[in-house]
Amino acid sequence: MRQTVLAPALDAGNTPNLTDYEEACRTFSWEQAERQFSWSKTQRVNMAHECIDRHVEDGYGHKPALHYIEGAHQRVWTFAELKQETDRWATAFRNEGVKRGDIVFIFLPKNADCYIAMLATVKIGAVAGPLFEAFMEEAVRDRIDDCKGRFLITDPDLAARVPRKDLPSLEKVFVTAGPESCRDNEISWTDILADTFVSGSPTEWVDLDAPLNIHYTSGSTGKPKGIVHAHRAMIHQYQTGHWVLDIKDDDIYWCTAHPGWVTGTVYAIFAPWLNRATIVVNGGRFDADSWYAAIEKAGVTVWYSAPTAFRMLKAAGDELVGRYDLSTLRHVLSVGEPLNPEVIYWGVEQLGLRIHDTWWMTETGAQLIVNLPSEPIKPGSMGRPFPGIDIRILDDDGIEQAPGDIGHLAIRAPWPGLMREVWQNEEKYRSYFQFDGWYLSGDLAYQDADGYVFFQGRSDDMINSSGERIGPFEVESKLLEHGAVAEAGVVGKPDPLRGEIVKAFIVLKPGYQNTPELLQEIRLFVRSQLSAHAAPREIEVLAELPKTKISGKILRRQLKTWNADEEPVINASDSALSTAIPK
Ligand code: WTA
Image (cartoon, rainbow, N blue to C red; front, side, top):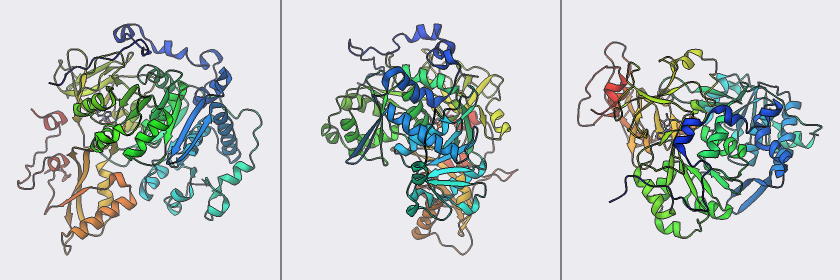
């Protein structure tokens, strides 16, 4: 019989930064966390300063800050080297006309340039807009166009996916290469850097509420929305890095996410560097061998990844685990999608470690529900609220539910990591605060009598595939641009490996035949124009799609439960609780 509660493995050499959760819940205040920052004494705020320059000033310039691995290639940058590089890049951005408050889109693979670009942007008070490296033209266009972006930095390969003709706002595209690799209207960043001389510090001091970064994220309706965070988020990000990631000075920390996703910015860059960790960056996408090799090569001690990645490692076989020395690992965490108990047991058996699930969202800016290293884990639960965070499970009317009853997961606002705004969309921002003073996550959950929270699904149609948020509307719109598609409805279909896969139901236009070749062509159409992760892995052709009687809207929830042998039952109830929760 497997244990339903996993006790923490505490030994003398492994005391967590937080040892008493209950005590912290009673006594912790965010003001206490603020004292960790140099600005609490100097009043001079800047996230890049706290992540890099401050450590150099404190005498840690020689400490490795970034360990980059790509296959056989490795390179290490110290904090002092990163300070120098980010100063140079920041000065170069400023010389090129980037000012405080301007957005700089960063469309780069997971490499040192990407990390340096992020911090250099932030250093001059500009706003970093990282884009996921697998985005294709449409995804790039939607995001840059939404906020009329003027600046972009990219590399020669990814530059080919930037549709300049559709983006008149884009004044300057910097390409991290020599002039020979640039197209006509692109600017060689290599040339610019060669002509950049740093005199004095380029750091721009801002206030805590100044915008820091923008992440476009998908919901169930419309195009992706720009979620803007402020420098203030560092308070929350530092404290979760200290207590949840449990970072100590000799840790080698690896978060596997790309900065285009919020985890790749907050927990691959800000939180670990605010805590002065050495971070590891492993170039390329998932590959079991290269991932284990990265842990061995860099001597990773703290590792933050996602359930799909753990499931893929599990599927790659136990024999592979044995081929690598993973003995440096001491703390493992997960985020982004439900972490099945099976995966936690695999971690215990194969790595000798518990996997600590954490819950948060792009909008929340940092972790809100966590499993701390000092606390028991209940496999299947996302953990308990971080100290200083007040959560409730509410019914459709905003009434608190009893322990064990499913409802809407809500958080008392504000907290330091909470988004500053949704880019030029006040209405969308307000939609999160339907019940006065409470942020509504859109997730359904229940809380047990010990305070542990159990994820039960979404109350809307957002799809979560491999931990990546996908908006059905974006995919449906793209499908409708294909000449053969008359109607499209897109849903998440449960999948043992990826949590959910994107499944499209389509109605073909008259004259088109349902053939495997046509479906493959439609799939590749979405893949090549939007992005690989959003392309439907399954497409099913129907004679018609279920719709609401009154407004004619496609009923995605009906499609979700669609069984090819049965007629869909048309039921236009709009209560998320009554339709999404199994009774
Ligand atoms: C889901 C990622 C189950 C959830 C940091 C949330 C999770 C959405 C978990 C946010 C978890 C995140 N267990 N589901 N531990 N963590 N989610 O904005 O539905 O990309 O609302 O932020 O992912 O996704 P986002």
